[in-house]
Length: 166
Ligand code: GDP
Ligand code: MG
Picture: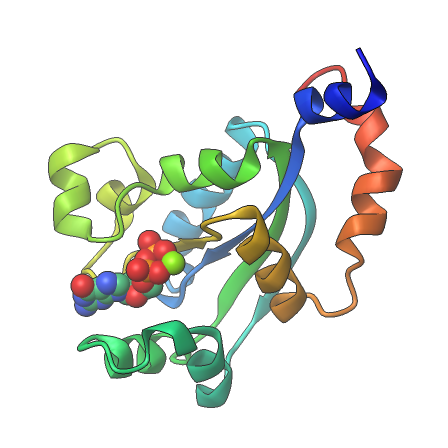
C-alpha cells in the first residue's frame, strides 16, 4: 500500500472535548468524566481550566444565535469554570461524540442511557460536555481554546508513534 492509504488507515485524530460548568462544579462528576476519557484510551494532549467571558461564549456559539436556547446557552457557558481537553485517538471525533450521547439529556436518558450526558446531564442546556462534530470543527475549536497549539505539526510529529496501540 502507498504511504497515503496507510496514513488513512491509521487515522489518528484530534478532537476538542470540554467539561462544561455544570459538571466542573461537582468534583465527583468532574472526576468521573476525566476517568471516562482515560478508560476510553484517549491521549490527553493538553488540558486546561478556564472561564469564559460572555463574548467568548457568544463567539463560540455564533452558529446558534437566534435559536430559542441561545441566550441560556451563552449565559451558562460563561457562568463558571470549564475544563478543555485536546484529545487524540483513532476516530477521536466520532468516538467522543458517541461517548457523550445525544445533545438533549432527556433524549439521551431514553435512547442512550450509558452515555455521559444521560448519566450526568442536568438539562438540555446544562448537558455536561462538548465535543467537536467534525474534523474541521475540531481544528477550529482547538484553535479557539488553545490558540498556541499547532495541530498539524503535532500530528506530523506524533502520529508514527501511535501506529501500535490505538
Ligand atoms: P452539541 O453539538 O451536541 O453540543 O449540540 P448543538 O451544537 O446542537 O448545541 C450546542 C449546545 O446548545 C448544546 O450542547 C446544548 O448545551 C445547547 N442546546 C442545543 N439544543 C438545545 C435545545 O434544544 N434546548 C436547550 N435548552 N439547549 C440546547
Ligand atoms: Mg455542536
